[in-house]
Structure formats: structure tokens, C-alpha cells
Amino acid sequence: MTHHQHTNENFGKNLLWATLLNVVITVFQIVGGIISGSLALISDAIHNLGDALAVFIAFIANKVSQKEATTSKTFGYKRIEILAALLNALVLVVICVVLVYESIERIQQPKEIRADIMLFVAIIGFLANLVAVFILHKDSGKNINVKAAYLHLLGDTFSSVAVIVVGIVIYYKNIVWLDPAVTILISLYLLKHTYSIIKETVNILMQGTPANIDIMAIKNYLESFNEIANIHHVHLWNLNDREIHFECHIE
Image (cartoon, rainbow, N blue to C red; front, side, top):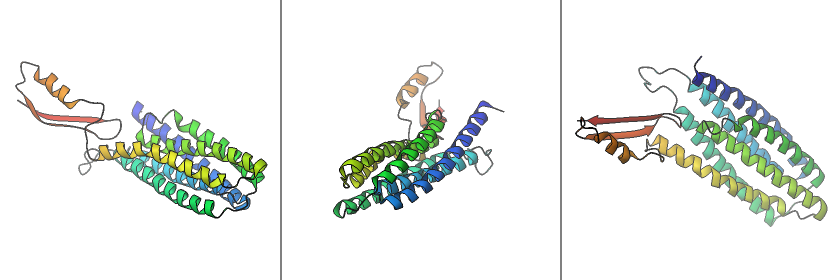
């Protein structure tokens, strides 16, 4: 087994565990949110549902990307990871927009919240999210698809902390408008971090030059050899976030 295959298998196992964990968190928080009347808990549950979908898509994409190249797919299926990362990011954007809309309505029409139930569920959700983040943390810097799923989970962990703080304040001060207000802040935070994923995946799909590579420096270096008169028809692009391809015509 090659190192690349072994790494992909580890990605797959970790993504599957994170998916199962998020499904459990989602069900728990939806029930807790309905009983307590907390929009922040329900929004956290929706985030977790989005996370579960994101991580599961990442898991499927990871499996498909390992398929061998064919005569009709000469580069193989590795770019499906980029498509999955883009889909994950777009799903998160939609979720955030919906949550902001719901939060504005809740601020205008506040509802009673059972802070004790909200607080208990939020703490359990935080601990479960922390475990999921820990599972994917090591691989988040090695694969853009895993990174997208990891950001989903990281955002939900921060949102769980915010929900806990809000639960404490509501329990002692009964300031119910904090519930939707924090939901808006969490959504804006997630949108900011999702932008970088969308930007990177679009650049890869458009076969743009990787941002950290100076294509003119490569051209000048190659043309410094006496045997090379000039190079032209230069192309440099990412197949996925780990593989870079280069081609040119040399005289």
C-alpha cells in the first residue's frame, strides 16, 4: 500500500466517524431546541446537520477520488474532492443566510426560552463538536475537502461556546434577544471563513495558477539554460489541492 493510499484511508475513517457524531449531535440539539424554545440551539442543530452532510460528502468524495484513471478520465477522479469542497462551502453559505433571516424575525418577536435545558444541551453539543474537531484537525491541512469539513465543525464548536454563554446570561438575566443576536454573529463568522474555501476551489476548477507560484520566475529560470531558446504555451494548474501540473512548449 502506498503512503497516499494509506493517508486517504485515514481521511475516510476520520470523516465517517465525524459524520456519525454530527448526526447524533443534530438530533439531540433539535429536540433540545424545540423543548427549550432556543433559536440558537436549533441554529446550532442546523449547522450540525450541514456539518454532517458536508463531512459525509467529503467521505464519499474521498472514496471516489481513489478510483484509477481511465481512457475517458485520464486524470482520474481526484477533482471530485474540489467539487465536494465547493458544494460544502455553498451549503454553509445558504445555512448562514437562513439563520440570519430567522434571527432577525426572532429579535422582532422574542419568545420565552428555558435556559436550563438550553444550557445542558449546549454543553453536550460543545463536547461532541470538540471531539469531532479533534478527529479531523490533523488532516485539515493536508486536503482541501477535509479542510472544508473541518471548518464546518470548527464553526459549530465556536457556536456551541456562544450558545453556552448565552444560556448562562438568559438563565440569570432573562435577556432573550441575545439568543438570535449570537446566531447572527456566528453566521457572519462562518461566512468569512467560508469565503477562502470558495475562492480556492473556484481557482482550481478554473485551472488558475496556484497563488504561491510565480509562473514568470519558472519561465525565466528555464530560459536561462543555453540549450533553451525560449518557452511558450505555458500552463500551470492544480489538479486538486495537492497535485500541481505544468506544461509548456520548448524551443
